[in-house]
Amino acid sequence: MKRSSIKKIAVLTGGGDCPGLNSAIRSVVQCCTLEHGIQVVGIPDGFKGLLENKFETLDLLNTTGIFSRGGTMLGSSNVDTPFSVPVTKGGKKVYEDRSDEVMEHLARERIDAMIVIGGDGTQAIAHGMAKKGLKVVGIPKTIDNDLNGTELTIGFHTAVTTAVDAIDKLHTTAESHHRVLVVEVMGRNAGWIALFAGLGGDADVILIPEIPYELEKVAASLNDLYHTHKRYSIVVVAEGAKPVGGDVTVNRIIEDSPEKVRLGGVGNQVAMQLEKLAGREARAINLGHLLRGGAPEGFDRILASRFGAAAVRAVMDGSFDTMVSYRNDIVELVPLETGAGKNRYINPESQFLRTARERGIHFGDT
Ligand code: F6P
Image (cartoon, rainbow, N blue to C red; front, side, top):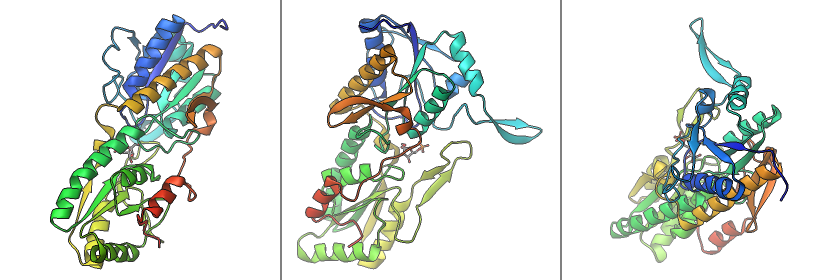
């Protein structure tokens, strides 16, 4: 094995939490301790903790039992970046670049390298820090599965299973009352969760951001269904879905967050309009943060194990400014730039999309 000068690494989780983060932390700690004999420290609350110069030792003892637990033992933040820190000066809010300061915190703590577990926003910060000389490797996570450069992110599979379980339960009420049930799922501007949840939950309609919808067409397909073989319907809507010529439904704006817009509410709109257009009783439910909760399922635990081990390997090999990535069942390294602030959307030629259309699932466009 190549000799490495790495003695101590830091790990943080940034962005929205998801199932599988603790599994990745545990994997990193095990590989560092048992395979390479190096120290690990955790940074609490993502880049917020780094700004506040906070570090906590991670070892085999204090990470025992976390592997199967949801959330992140380190805490996370999806609003903090060292490149733009809000401060009040002369009664006015201004934003300061404090990235030099966090580099000093890392040097003082004698951190040789960092593993950053996050989505596109977190990887963009990590890449920015790499440009300042930080030795960093990224691990992709997000329930949205929308990170460029990897076919899968930690958390996605569990979120899909949670959504499918919920949809299964909604079938019965929809069927008993002959209703249209509209299920909104997270995913930002990508339709991965909606597409997979709809496929797995036997939905009749899936509305995704990649395919702007026309509700008149959706209503016609639901009525067609009603008069032929099915007197209830399940419509899965991605929070980022929008009508042809229209825009997304914004839930709130968070001024200090690098990504300011939080989506939400489209499910209600779709249900109200479908009730009028189809003349059938409709209800909406937003699964929201439920999708980020719970224990990681087996697949996510294994993915997190592989990503954690591959990230530690990359650190020990000196392959920095990279991100571990999943492609065709192989975990490999891609330049960190590939995932930094960049997203991956559903391709119109996607086999998943094709399968859904062949099963008669409507996307609001035909
Ligand atoms: O990126 C994960 C995610 O859950 C998105 O699906 C959702 O749009 C967003 O985070 C919600 O963010 P918050 O927890 O700040 O409301």
